[in-house]
Image (cartoon, rainbow over all chains, first blue to last red; front, top):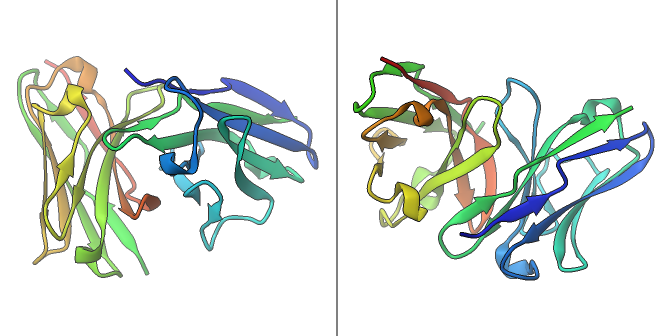
Length: 109
Length: 117
């Protein structure tokens, strides 16, 4: 069974920069896994941020960026805002199935 | 504007089935696929299947393959997810999400399914 791994929690100061990663038990994450990133706040549906590794939706704030880094997918927040405090999930495509990571709880403190 | 509006919460007994709908508007329904995702209380997201509208192709993880049916109705631009043989472990919020070419963009608001005797 494929496992997608994310940091369980991270803390960042307002205005700071933080990178969340998304690894795969099958080996390096590549663009062929079409990484997607989502933000979820308590009691809300997920909100899509990044698709196909690094593409932003029209509503994605400029401070969010996606990349591949050291064999993992990565989501970088530059100039973190208090409203960025949330759970972040990555999603990787393995043909079938898609697999979500376990999520990273980002605290802005 | 793009909208995905899901049906209301359900309470089901163990062993029963549930069918959740995802009514869409604001885009050309047949051009897209729909993933279904669930989230158990206090837990992360779990992908439970995908359907492509134009040819009804479906994909499922192995653990849901014999319990989940995904369908769409192009006349009402609605996607459906049916889950059978419910157990308490199926208690979760179920989401539909639109996607095209591995771009998951818009989500429904979620439907709470509670399985309890």
